[in-house]
Length: 291
Image 1 (cartoon, rainbow, N blue to C red):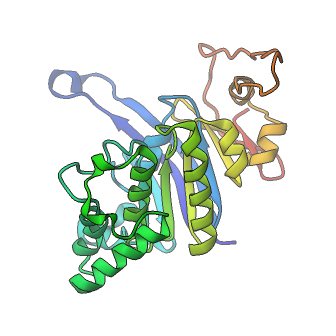
Image 2 (image 1 turned 90 degrees about the vertical axis):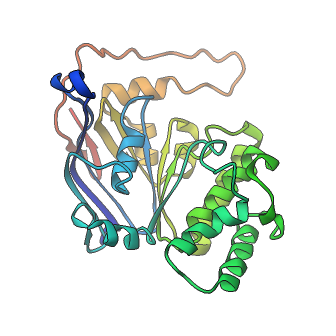
């Protein structure tokens, strides 16, 4: 199967400003390579600061990569001009982590969801408003709720509004940047089930960035583990969770809370100081690790 998204040797460095630019930059993403197949949910996991979110934003050029290649279908994303990139963004969108800061508090939510249609000049005003109502209905909200402001909704409802905005242009690829981590546990399952239902209904492909490993195991087809900006292991989800190879993956999985009362949590230590970056190699069929 031909990948929908191909990422190769992606690098992102951040440098300070003014006097601090003289120092060595921080390499947040370091030689990252992976692909995402049509219709799959590809998980990207790792601890805070591992480079997950930066990788996702580089894919959409919300952050400009330092080097590397990003291909979406037959498009070289890094080679697109600003005008071509704007047009290409009809096909790939993002759902942000924090539903409380990702919606403009001064705009009515109907206008927030309508905004991509206005920017891309899709349809008349009446057609756009009809599309907004359908999108609200699609994500499980009252179609007449568009006249309200973001503060009038709960966190879960705001995330549904963000998802409706992402779906407005009928994209095929969505970066889900920890879309449920800011929500109450009772609401998380509802939003995850909605994402899965929409994926089946609309044929969506997801890059799912998360740190909740139990959730990743449940919904992702393949998973890549990031550490210090590098992918250290990549495999089918069940394969990675049952037979991890890299020491960091083993340490990460050992931190998953046990559900049985009284069951002892046996943590596997990881030698952070002794970490040496090496390239991925195939340790078994479709299972890659940096060992």
